[in-house]
Image (tube, rainbow, N blue to C red; front, side, top):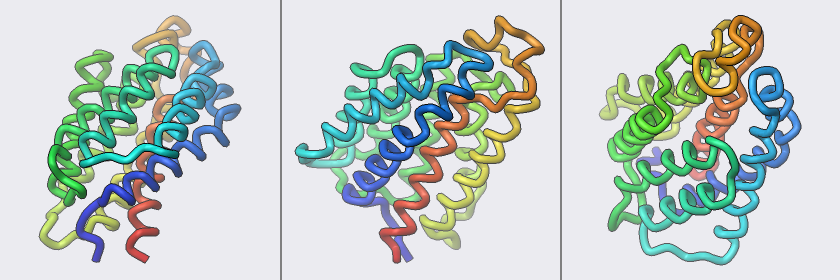
Length: 215
């Protein structure tokens, strides 16, 4: 049973996510065009390329340094609100990695809970507002409800990824109440949120990387 998320697995997670984001750039833009400016994929793709460049040659002493460097790469390269939100995600998650070369499930779920809090504080979004919060909130809730004494890391992250995807899909029936999407009102209903889609992808890549490391 894989008990910890090592720095190598975290790197694999980030590399997988970056590759998936770049591959999904057009799809994310299409989703965003229904309720936003149609640039979520392009903006996040720029950040993904910056993170890929960072990871290609960099070495890090601990998880905090690794994830905080990713956070700054995103903040400095991603346009729109996505850079600040994803930067906050990784910066808050990095706090639990100080002096550590791996994160156990308890620390990982504490860090992801802090990441959710940071995103909500920054963006002012709540569940049901049709934002990326609608993916990360159910994922964190799923993790926090687990008994970590009987649930391994891979299983826990699988449940979190599934919850994030369910949250993503649920945004199709929501009316946007934040950001550009709020300007179109009821016309935002019927469209899956682009931010929730990329956030669900982040959790699915986390699970897949942990699963691969355990194989």
